[in-house]
Structure formats: structure tokens, C-alpha cells
Image (cartoon, rainbow, N blue to C red; front, side, top):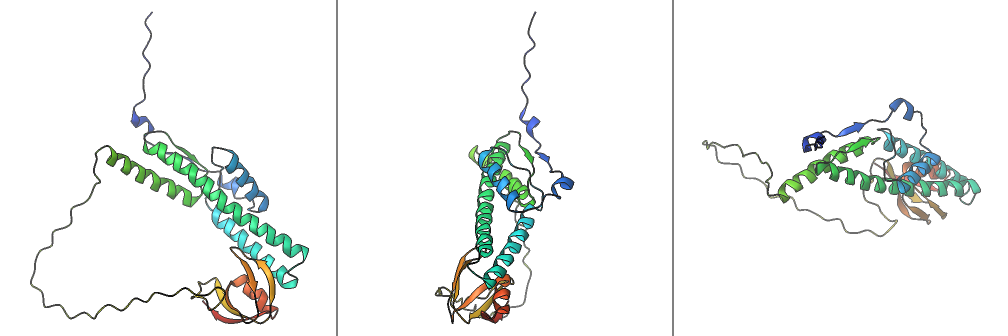
Length: 248
């Protein structure tokens, strides 16, 4: 009896990206806290697959970190060397570090999925946060274009529209371009550059023991003029440690 030859799937069989969205109702109930961040970090560092995240995971994580920073600043104002202040600072450092590592692990996995898709494979994408979906789509487009160029293709460009010559009045004299000034590097913890809306500039009234913020360790000395996150500055202003110089 003859054997029926196996059918080989054509590249068109892999044409669609399979998105499997996370269960929003279930995941929305999950609190973004230290325990969950640690769990996601462990999964991303030990597994080849992506952990399932809700679309707004990263904004919720940022909100959690800002809240943690405010609590740490409040405890530092009460007593920089208290047990609670030190525990909050330690938790803040660990969460910020784990966030950075989670993003790195996930970006590597997303890049591998995009490469597979761009080369005709099937990419099952599930549980991506909103910015990660956009990253995946952009990578697929760029890798597909690079693949086409490698095989002798050309990038599609649209011809520029024809411009008809019409008599016009003599153009008015244009003023010379304004000079561009480059801001020189400034010494640390002195007059800071214009702060974004979540930063303020303060004048330090007395020496303050070193403490950790969301992205830096602060050592404030009397007469320093520094830029601080608004949450930290408010606590220190309320306790008479600093005075406000400028807001965004």
C-alpha cells in the first residue's frame, strides 16, 4: 500500500501574529507590590517564556514606586536611621533594580519572538503590556525590512510630488538664525537645570544624613541648592530641613 506524502505548510500558514491577551478582569485584581515584582523577576530570569502582564502593568508599577518613595521620605524626615526608614529605603532600591532587570529580560524575549516572526515563523504573543505590544510590532517591521534588503530587495519609497513653478513675489529677508548656546556641565548638587514638573529646587538649611531616593542616593549638606523629587522635598520642607527655591 502506497504512503500518502506529507504536506508541507507554506509560509502563508504563518502569516498571522497570534496575540493572546491576558485576562484583564483577573489580572486587574492583582496588586502590584514587592511580592509580585519579585515573583515576576524570578519567572523572567528562570523561564524562556514571558510572564503574563496586564496592559497597564508598568504605569501601576510606577505608581507603586512613587508611593514607596513618599513613605520612605516621610520616615527619613522622622528619623533617617530608624528601622522603618532603612527597611523602606532597602525595599525601594530592590524594586527599582528588579524593574530594570524585568524590562531587560522581557525585551530580549520579545526580540527573539519578533525575529522568528520576521523570518516566517509563528509567534505566539501573550500577556504583553501595552508598550511591549508596540515594541514587538516595530521590531517585526524593521527585521522584515532588513531581511528583504539582505535578499536584494529595495525599500518602498513614494515619489516626491511634482512642484509647479509659479511666479512669486521676492521673498522677504529672513533674520539670521539665533545662536545656539550649549549649557556647560554643572557641579553636582549645586544650581540645577530647569526641573520637570515632578521636581523642585530647594535650599538645604542643615546637614541631612544620607538617604536613598527612587533613582539616586542623596547626601545633603547645609547651604546646598539641589533638585529633589516633589514628594521628598515636601517632607523636608514641612520639617524645616530645606526651603523652596523654585518649582516647575
